[in-house]
Length: 250
Image (cartoon, rainbow, N blue to C red; front, side, top):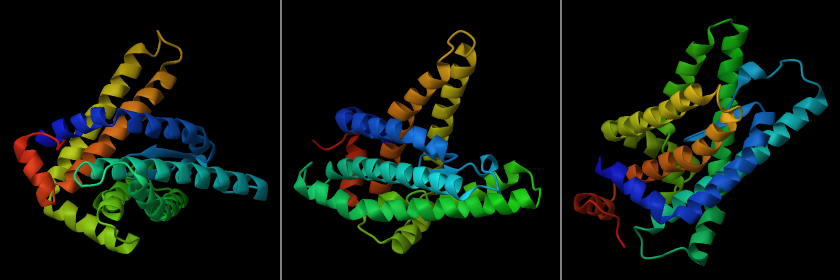
């Protein structure tokens, strides 16, 4: 639980960056919805069940345009957040060096998200055409996605290319399965609380879905990404020493 506490401390310490991350997500969310996709911690996924298989050229171009633009914004926002959390455990602070790091890494994060989204679309389309239940394709996508969930962190923290980052993420999940499960458990709890909160107040507050979106965007997603970055950083000696002290370095 020390990692969860560290992530919460880091979330509070970087409140301004978290706020910028949330604003970028709120900007990208409508575009993602228009592209029949949605953001989740670790990537952007396509709702293939919402996409018609007979789209006009204009509809297809519009959907792809919104998808690519929303993914680009999400990639920049996520790269910024991870780089700032990483900077707490390095000699550099938020500076031109951090900006350069963001500039050099977000294209790879963007390409990774696009590639995985295309993969999820292909899996979903194949399963839909074969009339296989939706939940099975969701399970398959999850099982494939889970080993690579730390790929953005590996790209930015480890300064790796996409292939090396995916391999490193898979090794990290295998080696630190308990920490990966901790991250999943925290995510399920937070998302579950939001869902229960929305269900209880849905009839009383007509704009409750908007409130839920704001809560997820401002707290749940950024906190899960901060936690995921703290977990990945735990592989390094300086971070392990910080965990043992139970505090972030000042």
